[in-house]
Image (cartoon, rainbow, N blue to C red; front, side, top):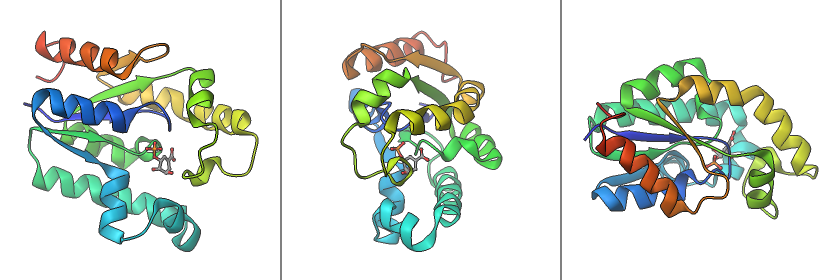
Length: 175
Ligand code: S3P
């Protein structure tokens, strides 16, 4: 089966849905944040604070390149929310597999992300404003990069998995 890649804003459910989707198909699941944390033996927030965002973005590009070399098919990959922003990464994502955008309204994201302290770009108050301003820069990118858009507001993870699975099984995507 062609690799499936999940993109979307922080809090859109990429990691959870990625895991559930991979279980459904018996595939391996890789999350780029976890991959980078393990490889660097550092938390994402420490990489940001000690090495800077640009360093992290380069690690993301390297990560996708390694996945392309290593896995031609049969994996589900959930990627960090900012990874598709870099031009080169968008091309690499399409080489790696079929791209699915997990779309969510700002209010949904805000609910899911309130109280979060793991994500460096959301630190320091005014969560709403931070989500809005990042989303303004990213929404069109997510939409243009994806082969399939799934609106996740009000849905349980299991429903989202069902929608993606139907699209794959009906061969609307993933060929
Ligand atoms: C980021 C999203 C995070 C992580 C880092 C930066 C972003 O991943 O890669 O904190 O720029 O949107 P999640 O989308 O899995 O939270």
